Length: 162
Image 1 (tube, rainbow, N blue to C red):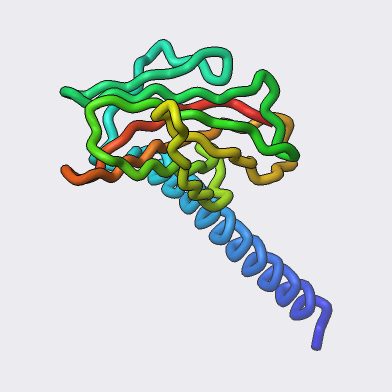
Image 2: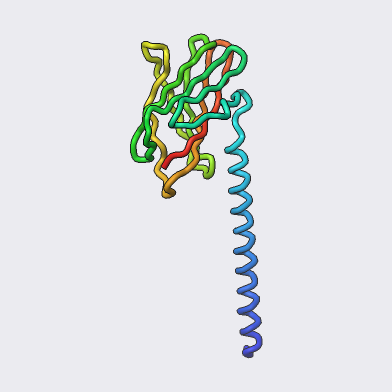
């Protein structure tokens, strides 16, 4: 084999590697983009929260017809290494089951489902822990899912935590 043939083979091998690398990179970018689009779209039966929502500093509310939801994170510091208490207050529901579905908005990290327990005052509460992430802070979405005798509904509330 001549030097010319060896050089041509190396260039051909490098070209194939570069094409494969670019193709894999394009697939990765597309899958991340589509995944983020899917995660950011709330379920059809959820109604929008008040646009002035600022968790965890304030409670947030959402209303639709006679259904009202108030969501509170009962802590000032949200850290992935410590559980934090959440509280949901409802009106317009008949004997509901309340679940919080927690997910990262910016990156799929799985979903955490927590069923809240009804308290003597009528509110629903639980302690929730965020998945540990290598980033300092991340955007999260808490979907409040409510099932009662009339069907299912709820809302979503976004917040930042580290």
